[in-house]
Picture 1 (cartoon, helix red, strand yellow):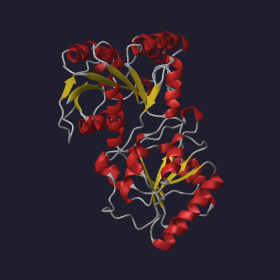
Picture 2 (picture 1 turned 180 degrees about the vertical axis):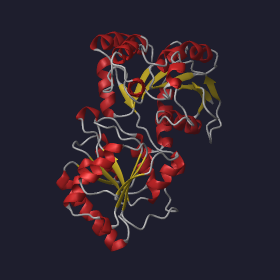
Picture 3 (picture 1 turned 60 degrees about the horizontal axis):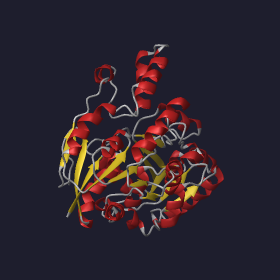
Picture 4 (picture 1 turned 30 degrees about the vertical axis):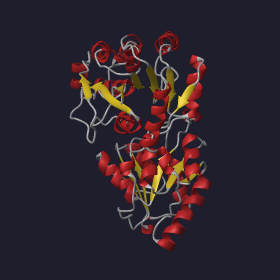
Length: 409
């Protein structure tokens, strides 16, 4: 069996969702003739249900003491760190200082100090090929110098990322770095057709699309009872300004839903004061409930119990090629998905392809779908699910496609 080194800064049991793609590869590549070895940062404990070697290289954060002093989690991205630090200090000139740090010191990303130690370890690991999966781009810099046939994988794009927070001058300089680093990669892969097109245009080469997926061991087999009342469940983060449940709230108000209907809209994840304010605005106080953070296992359980799973689509068409990880978890839960947002995008297309639910792009459309769900629940006690063909989005199929790319090397 050939050996592949998977370089991913994020990896379970750390909660960063970016680690799941690498974890899925490590779990299922052996079924297709590739023995994985994982190179990652230091973990709080060993990952569960994984038999391959996991080599940890500690991340020495040069700003670690400062971040800890203000309660900033090193696993968060720089944008979150900046926001929290500004809120903690509330110093007017801090904006300039933090921006200057990001422009100059966090190049190409805030994890750059991991590069030297990780490269020294990677060069000493015998393997036939390397897969590096970002964010952060530092993993690609390590892979480019590891001296092995190399696949550069992008869960999110590098300088073409729509969240790119730096100046045009920094971006121009970093684009040159990106092209130089990736020139030695034999293959580029990314997680959607739209992202593949963008990445291919920048680098003038073909990019393979390999979607994310779900763990086949988590697929709902019908062993978990569905809640008796009409429950709409959302799990995870809401990216304020880029996603919003307001269209759903407006529709619920328009069709005259009251607390007497028994409907609940349950959010599991960060607690947002603005969400309670928005719910009150549409007379949904008491029906919209925020439960705070729960474990990943409990989140999966709540998805299975739900009558309907809420997916918030991006409200900016530029993000239309980005699939959220929860979409694939929702497919594994085998419960009807209600996608709400102003644009038809990749997630809407996927839901339609497998018949897993409905996408609503206006309040009126959302009203019609909610009324259909109410009728289905009234007549049968549950909202009917008609999904099929979801197995193509499992980690097994994802690993099969990566194995084919590795074989081609």
